[in-house]
Length: 73
Image (cartoon, rainbow, N blue to C red; front, side, top):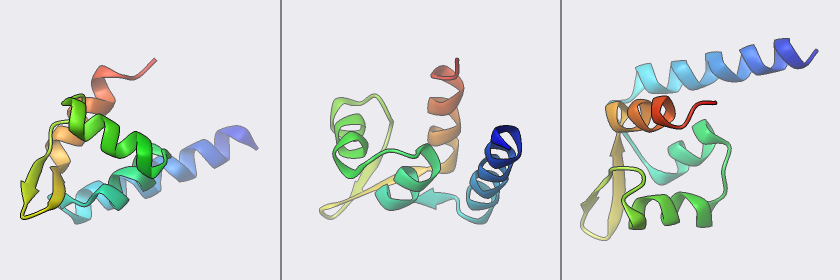
């Protein structure tokens, strides 16, 4: 059950990464399974490379993939 659930989640993440080249913080939260505070902390600290469009953050799919690769266990 756990394995199937994990694989389903990974499939959804990959679909989202393939669909968008630029992600919103909400997309990042969905993919990483983290909350709003954690997502913005990563962006503000530079742990996750993002860029601003006006007052809004955006993250490239490539930057998110790089972050996930660096932080996998």
